[in-house]
Length: 436
Image (tube, rainbow, N blue to C red; front, side, top):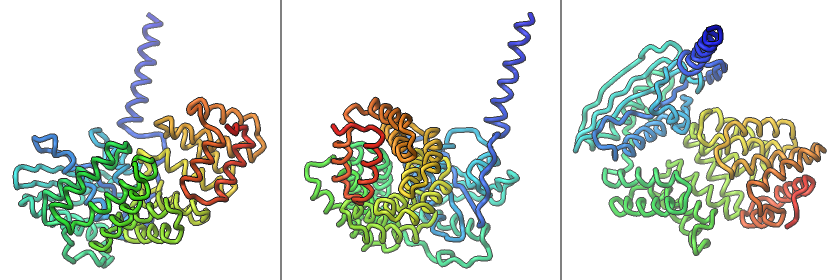
């Protein structure tokens, strides 16, 4: 009986601890609020009977986040972090604490034939109280007008003292052809998956969108990004042609919409692959100016600045990317970039600390390999030879063919700065990485 009673007591304690962590609160302190109005837009609920409408709902939510992000007076959390709460019963106060924002926007969308109903609620994440709510019943062709009205209302509620150029102006409709927009949203969902097949599918769907509306800029930017990915991963039989096509697609997107941050970011990404430092950094900085709240653009800019040995400028960009998306599915990438930048700055202890953060976010063997390599490189320069060799062994266990020769070959293909290559190869040689 005593054992049974003890077990029940321990079980009750465990359940209580779980409830507090998952429902009642978190032992981790919340992130500090930014110094300007901050908001996180949760993934809207799909109330349509058709499950195939999920991409439409996700696309509209992301487009709303992008629209809000263009307002420099707001701090807007990336969709990569807010979408992780989809399908979970988490109260807004906890979400606000975990993301470090003062306001939460949530809503639902029901699409039926040529009608759409959008319901939204703006919640004060510090108290859980509703600040504003509205329901829109409109023709489907009015969907962009609904997004604009929601964005303008939120900007007016959160930053009423600021006169923003976009507020009060008519939002430029990205396309008047909803079939083209639907195809673009499907292409966007495909391009987010980094496989050869899904990148090819994304390009095909974007091409179909362009056939419906040749003046729709976004599909061109998406094609540029997808072709850049194909070139980087060598998922193409004609890499030079693929790279040329990527540049031309991004330029077309910019010609059609000179304020499209995604197009500038895609062009900067592609130019990095060519080794063109000036145009790579210039276009990514322009993208960041156009959309200062986009965590992926900040991440890409940080990576590119580090790529060309602008480490001092890269560090604040990666820190801002992490702050804009603190629960990002790509946190392993973000923390690796942070560790990588700090390694180049020769702050080896801080780089190892970033690698420890990376360890808690690892999801696959590719980034586990990079985790061991960054640790090996830091340990080598700190003179901790045994630890460095152990990390090299761990990396080679995950990727048996790994060697200085294979790493050198990959460096040469990627067109990054020669001094970055030299430092890395020197560190890994000290750590015991074999030549072959």
